[in-house]
Figure 1 (cartoon, rainbow, N blue to C red):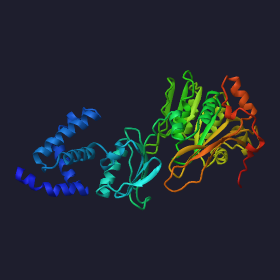
Figure 2 (figure 1 turned 90 degrees about the vertical axis):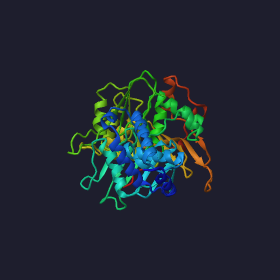
Figure 3 (figure 1 turned 90 degrees about the horizontal axis):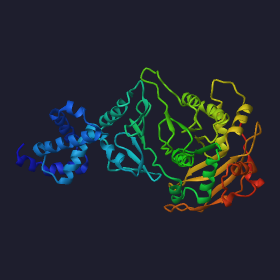
Figure 4 (figure 1 turned 180 degrees about the vertical axis):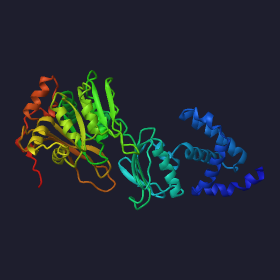
Length: 450
């Protein structure tokens, strides 16, 4: 192509880039790049080297065949060409943005992101067509030997960098192909969470003591309340000499102790075989001589195995469960534990839960997007008694107005006598805010709804 032709294309091409309708041009250069590249040589490169090599080839191609455009537009076009070849196309800028915690694609022209706990629609990004979105989906699921089509319209997968991906397509999704990408939560220390107003210093000291004292802790909360992030922070208080086994659907926990074994479930293959469930892994972990077991989330029959593990010498174990408050959490555990092939009475399950669970830490997401500990309750019932919870800490919010940051204060109560005795036996200091008798008004019975 002559220089005159390239210059004459500059104005039109610049307008195309500004309208983000450059898919045809990207497709054209991508096809030509594939024709000119040495694919055998590219196959031997790692991801970083591959991207650098393709960017260099694309740059040479634009120098020879492309329009005369500004350096910024040229860099953008090269990135888009390479992203389409080895990445996720228009989603790559969002994946590179550390502030984005979740990406939601509701059809090819509707992309939403979550930042700081708030959802916003990205008006600047969209796929050029449904076909391009399907191409991106195929690239994701193909990398993990999965498939998605009308016979299998739902799939869970993971990106090479670890992000969890869910895909659902028509006929189940009436809006078109939907793609949800959840980023791994950034590991926070407890001190950082205090700085983010997720809890106060006395409560953090108490939770650290409860973990060191080997009480069994359940972190409960709704979707997106930061359960995994908080579980990761709690796990930092486990002594480094203990053997810890983590069990998760997708390995998100980032424990810093030296003796950690990470187990991850596996979905069935395209033939419907080879599935390894959370319950299988919890059972297997019991044969691995754990000091503590951490279950990323209980949502089925594995709850019973976890309770039995907590009751048979694996004290100080941690888990999360979806629930709106501690009362719902304890009843949900009872329901989940009954979802097995075993016929166990609810009285027996109540006995298991009263003996196994010591603490419920409830997380919520406020209207301003802040994730925080809203309530901490201790189980004070025993054996087959009806569930009784003692609220030892609760966040009381101030009146909130639109656009403002939620403020409030924590109200702390004393600890039950057996818990204070257990902590002191292990040489753990009790924070002054909690070092007193528990009042009767803090204890309430949990009633199961019919």
